[in-house]
Image 1 (cartoon, rainbow, N blue to C red):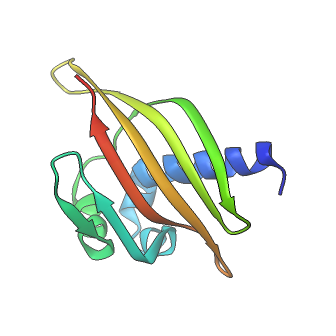
Image 2 (image 1 turned 45 degrees about the vertical axis):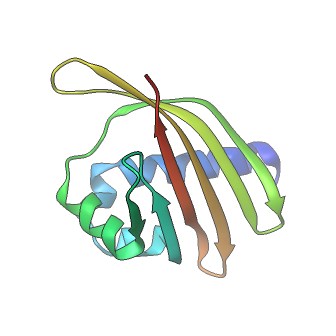
Length: 121
């Protein structure tokens, strides 16, 4: 797969994780999250696949901007996505975070293996 196509695919998968449609269907999230998934949250909490599915299906969808999105190929079947995410809260205050994700290709498709978000001041 060419880099531009891979970049677009991984960006679309990242967006799908924040999309209310994906969150409404518990069958979609288990396919997007690798069985070995782990997240280091901005709060310092470590989340498992089950934790994230529970959190994402019970919280409202996020709407924000993905900025400076880049994908770096780590191997034929593994990539690192890095980007800044900006969202507006209900109170009108904008939050910004730096995010990184490792995606792994399996026979079923690309799944997120690791994610970390770091809040920016």
